[in-house]
Image (cartoon, rainbow, N blue to C red; front, side, top):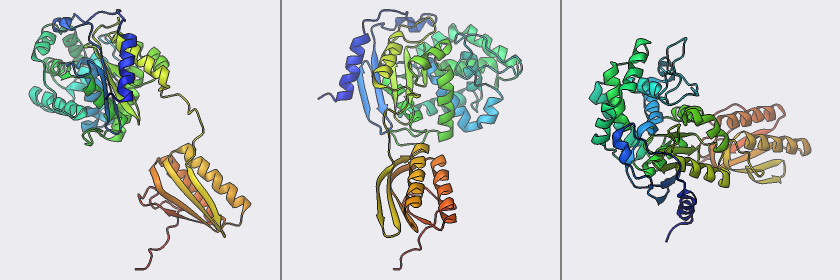
Length: 411
């Protein structure tokens, strides 16, 4: 029996399969043989559940979708400060293979155009073979399985890659390329020729959505801070000179590749992988973009869409004598902590309260801003002669001032 979400993805493909715009990439000869009718989609939640439709398991080469994941590897190994000396963060507003170097620094504008991606690849340690092995292992960890190299596509890219070699030599002349130009481009050609499926791209996107933990393998691949940086750059630069319109119309951090793949991410919720070879003039999959825009519009997935209804983090609130008891639930973010703080202040103003019991047993996460706001509320209550005692089995509040923990029970 098909689950409802997979059925919805199948219906999505049916709505857009008749789109005939775009051309299969042919500047890399081996890509010209792709079947233009191929169309697949996969969605993977941060809980690790996989939903597929169409040609979601058909292999193709990752091409430029590899770029944010190699950038993540470089950030993990070298840190943001060092990587930022070699490649910037700004959208170029130009085609993916344009010469976009900052006049003051010589850096490529960002790591998701070819010049920036080649520089990023050059930062990975080791000789050519070791560098590529490290990249393949990292992308395999994102995908949750070992990825193989399509040797035919690699040779085809290498035989027609003079523009990329020119970009490498240009960045080398600016002092930002970290290894010889021919070596950097050879690793880059192999990186782009790794074979994936739409399901792989969805798992990779879901790993970013899940703050760097692969939701299928449960393995931490990158740190939460690295995932945040990568998603930020994908939001502004991932769809090349279509990135601004993409964020307006779709509103999901994404990255496309000329092999026909797109990965898109709703942080904290899921990753999507789409595969359809015909491309628009910017090098983005025509059907893939249409399907993702349709999905975002119908389901309200834009990252900047406001909440449609009020949320409450207070599951229950009771008074007994001079004790106010609050049972909290879910994820405590700023708006949740603000609600809790306001409720406490209103109750203390209305009743003679000496103790506030906060039960965080059913809280799943506490963002730093929420913890600080609750601690400030605790400090304020202490100044009024009111104690706050938490039941905090996960230790979310730590030992922040203003939070008084009861002594251990005897026995």
